Length: 288
Image (cartoon, rainbow, N blue to C red; front, side, top):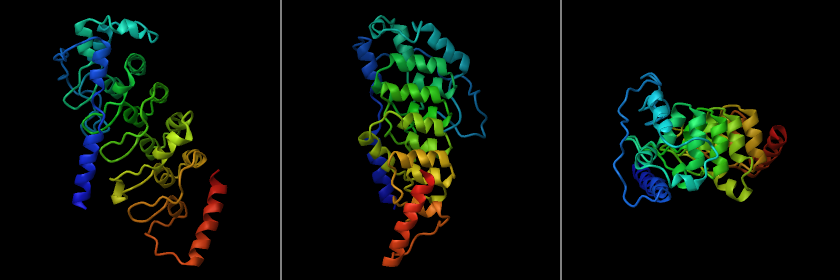
């Protein structure tokens, strides 16, 4: 089991999206990466120490709200409609500020979302290329993960419309859709699935995590929505093609959870398979 976790960690490290800042620097016509000039060592004043962290987990921050506002206001972000041609005219100081990554791996977009400053976050989404939007911090959280966790629906919508990846997984193997279904953020889940083609959405719906709560590993988004008894999210996912037969590590499917059966199933007989198929049909009719 430990070797499986090591392989997953190695694979995750290989797949981690963290090179988008160089793409933005190329837009800014910067030939050499420069040392960041912003000080991100300020007090952590957004969340209490007892809560989970957002920049090293879901719940806190490494920069104050005031300093974040100062950073963005110092840059030439006069409106959301700024043309990308104007980005190339950013000063060296502005570029340094926008391309800074903290010791926790957070970009300034991560920080804007952590502090729930939707106006600044949406400005940054407009000027950053897709590669920057998909940067994951040290816990593999993308801006979309954080915006979903905080239920910032407008930011989620902006990220999805700009092409942010739905398939990125955090350190627990959760996609942003997992996060939405785990916390009952149905509007966020809707924004993530509304305009996505079935071929692109199918792999996201099939993705299973690897560090579920209470050792309930390999949960899909549908597992989490059913477990939360979130009828709206379950209907949404089933309508988009989620698989009711996807099994967790312990063998439970969303159908088992919906029927209240949380124990690993025994090898099925022909009679139980017939009952299973009948129950699956009734469940689909009930949820849709």
